[in-house]
Length: 312
Image (cartoon, rainbow, N blue to C red; front, side, top):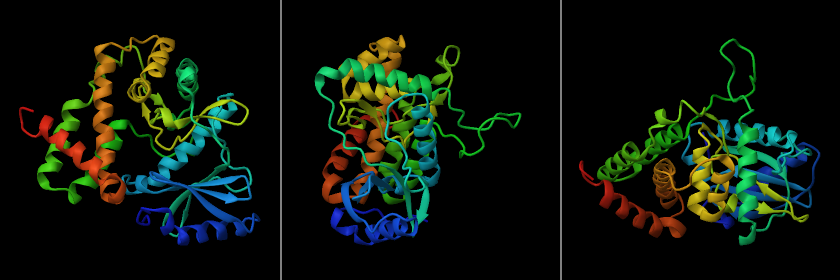
């Protein structure tokens, strides 16, 4: 079981006490936990220690096994760092996790202050994403059929798997007709990956490679971070995600990956991404209505207009 998501920072006092107690039990502190962000995750700095707790928040409500997603995140971060790909490291002062603490799924990472990436670094961002994807491909996310390979990871998921679980979570909470609209949207928009299977294989990817998940540290180093959406899918998922949020950087990524950003295939992936984001927006509208209800209603109206009938 997971605890109900937190809508605002002032609702986090109980969670902060849980995190402080865990730190003390492991020889860190006392700390003064400070909420840095509330959204998909609750991000808490365990000040003054250089430790950040990442607590699954709305994401926990949208997943059937949130702890598995966090385990994949920690494993991918360690794999990237070992290969020289900059990201945010799991904590070395507390066990990274994931931990299930009084209903909350938690991981611990190093505290790194990151600032948004300037527009003039779009080429670098695109190239860095390709580097990340290339190295991530070397991570065996599931045991080999002969029993060799990694055994410390949960079963892999594709982006379609994630969408189906999210839909299952949403349908009981929406009007029946809106659940039907979302079902049609997924079925109509998901990319037929058979066209890729001759030239590409599914692999570990970032899973949510949009602009806000890249940042610049105090040394000027670019880091991709926030890996808890990592899934086992085609790299096109990441490149289309970046194309959607930052077209210049996304086009740079496609060029470095040898892909045509103007191809019908990338266009189809952009449509798929739009629907996947729309699913999450519906959940955010339910869990944090003061912040997201208006956007969720607007998105649903657009979905109804496009997929509100059998012929839509």
